[in-house]
Image 1: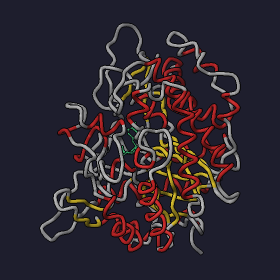
Image 2: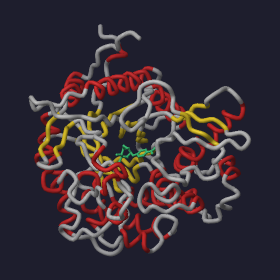
Image 3: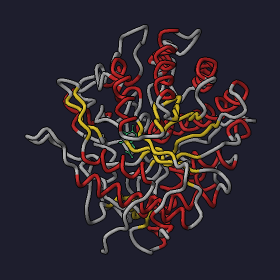
Image 4: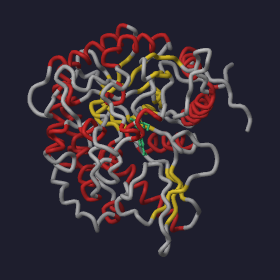
Length: 473
Ligand code: PNW
């Protein structure tokens, strides 16, 4: 008999993930207008080498080949996002048919190959017009998002079963409006907290719209990137630093979404920045909508300590260079680079964080199916003279994370699928094209796709549902 700890459940979804701005290109085609990421990437100094998503992987024109590639690799799922300004250019008013047609064609292509689409409504590309009207710190943006959700649900609800409202609202709020390393590049900690609340509200309102519009069989989820936080020592002060980061990274979203409340410690920690009066009567009930699954994205843990006295805070939090912290009112917290292996992002490799998060949410939200919607690693991949791309480090990273998922399943977590970040090397936000997360190599001159050895390895895992036991040590 097979050891249960090496076999994934039957019907486990094996997929890859992408996001519209990172792969599509065609930034000015068929009526698409700028999103905050177009504006940001075209602003000098904001992305490495001035890279933009103008062309990216040209997936907008090559999606048929890309879906054929997924099929060749034996994938049963694909997670992609819809570009809001492609289907509703100003973030208001009617939909642009050609924009919707692109996603309809993509979905039909997936379905024809037996690949389950997981559609994300928002992966960070707010229409610039809505940013000009105030962006996520402005309450109206949440209502606009619910209207946009209706347009997409009406167009694709007959063929897409799995829906995600937001991807990683933490990044949208705290990297976009706090540290400013992501679009729109604003740096006001109080605005970041307002943005977080309005993203929560957008999630709740859009979930209600999806329920009213989609067939009863449709499933609605959200993708969070909760922090696997570890205190640097057992001291009370370090444990308190970990508590603060957990509140600001994770509970600020999971609290209202799953439990209908912002935790008291979060409100107290941030009291000198805001009185949270932007939370209106009825908001928390609107945000706490029953969900059909919870999607978690995980790359690396966070190890934190309290900064005592006047010590200068050394930042190793992997969130890019900014003098502004993405952690409002947690400026007395230091992030530590754990010893050991790291990926090209400088993110340390520790799969136990993924086990911990899956178990945490399986306890915190009993009965809610879990999906890993992002996990993966950037490496400095190069094409060999034989035309192949060998990425043994990525295989090793993935293997260890799959064992971490199996461990969580063994201990009771109901994990239903895995979407590797990413199908293709793509536009890695502020890092541009320099960081390759793909399991398929992309030559950005020719747009040629070459599956890396990790793609073949992953295809074999998807085919058998079994993973060899980890070597000792
Ligand atoms: C996620 N951080 O981004 C995104 O959902 C993807 O679009 C992205 O390409 C991928 O992870 C790899 O970076 C993150 O600073 C960006 O903590 C930054 C952070 C986390 C996730």
